[in-house]
Image 1 (cartoon, helix red, strand yellow):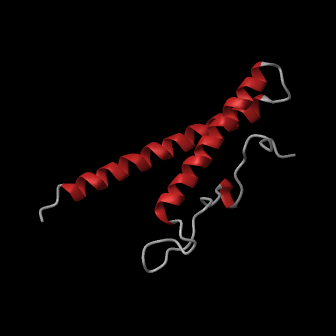
Image 2 (spheres, helix red, strand yellow; image 1 turned 30 degrees about the horizontal axis):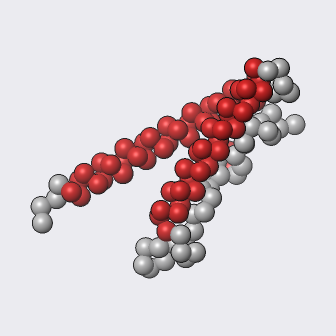
Length: 106
């Protein structure tokens, strides 16, 4: 039995799944499906939002005495925490890269 079946579990090796919407990049820097970086980023943020909403829903269900076990709740909360931490790190790196580019001498 999968303890996180209802908690938005991730699949793949070592519990890591690829970013949905990610596609190989063509020679023009845009994904082959035409989405590009902006679409991949939007999809990733949507997945983070969904993970956090799932954790909130499970917490509310657990507090109301619903059919959610403590281990399911804790796993969902950790997934949401890690996803938010990843978004913050990506944001910091993008801002740092932007500042580096803007400070370059032309």
